[in-house]
Image (cartoon, rainbow, N blue to C red; front, side, top):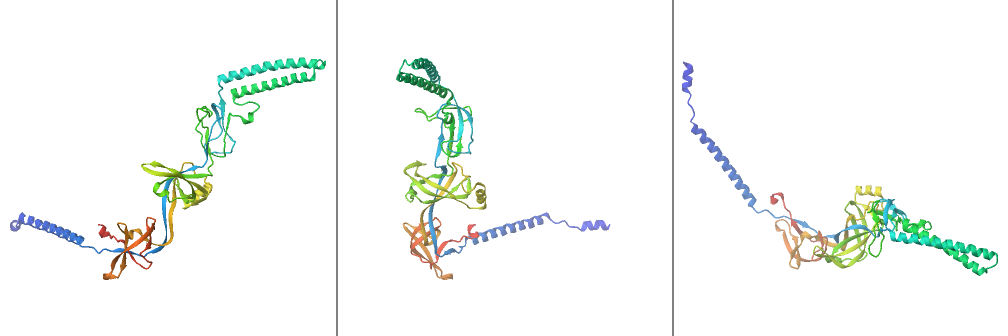
Length: 405
């Protein structure tokens, strides 16, 4: 009986009351988000105090520089070509090796011209017949001379003819050997079949292989290049400079060379050539320049560069022909001048102004003052008139994190 009475006393809550409380909670959250967003936007809309950097003019050295892109090349690069036509029979050297002047690079096997060969053989046969006849005449004359039947003068003439016939046969045989083999016994030491380097240096390229046909230089063609040799101890920098800057250059101007593949190394150079004629590149007129690279000035800009110098030496052994390089040239320089950051200037037409800081705290103000500027390096600029070292100049605005947002 007690169990049944307790169940009958429980009163179920109406479902409508739970739903009403949940709606009030959601409405309160939405109102809270809305109010928070409004407060945030209101705070962001309030004007922030503008704060500027304050700078003092300083004594500086100002340099106006330009960077020229170019490449490193040997001053003298020689193409070694054969003196005769034929086929490459042997290569004694490889690219990258050092050679001395007169050292053999390759050997050419001659392929004789059939017309020249036939003519040389006929000359030998004719010279042989003439020699045999001259020997018979001499023996006959010599017997008569012993019997004193001919004079000494006639005997000497016949003997001279014999010597001439002997020389003619030797010359004909040499000519035949040259046409057939490219070399004769009499000039074997100066054989044209041996291709020798004409200068001392490094072999940059050997564009032929064993078995390739080569021809000598003549009126109708330049001949086949057997090897390219250059002195890699005498290098130049070659590049182009814009016409707006070429007027500020002069012969002898120092340059600093940085090679793209060897960023840790730097060389000094001196300008030695400015082209008198412009070339058009991408619609702009540029002038070619050349500068002598001073390998002895090689210096390292980092520990890595010092390691390269230790391995290769300061003689430029690590430099290769055709390396891309950048040359830095000082176009103008001003020493110990009063300078400020260029960002502190205000440009208006042809005039330049700065803002001088005066007062402090709530009384601080910025007075606009005209100045006369000079040389600029892109960061700092020379001020010739209108400022003193005691002035304080307004710089760029200081941007805080909340202002960036």
